[in-house]
Length: 112
Image (cartoon, rainbow, N blue to C red; front, side, top):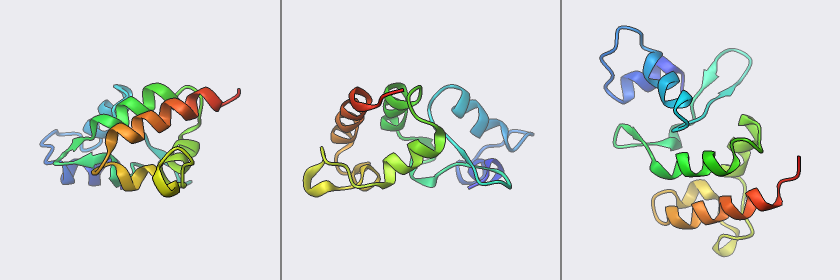
């Protein structure tokens, strides 16, 4: 979603509809990708109108090692450290601790 869409979804009343998304991104609570037309914020990062805490944890571990597109792919690609090669995005609700542990494992493997 775009920054204004994220603002509407999360109930922001700020005069600048992009402010919330960019503040959260700057604080390392969410990330975005640029699709060539706009910055897009993957919806899976939001739960109950707030960023999921595990997203910030993953960003602390992988954000310096991966591009934003690589992060998006990391979340949506089956991971060998997750049961039955599940995708991290599929475990955000059920097992965020396993997602954080998979990020730790991936961070150890990423070579600059």
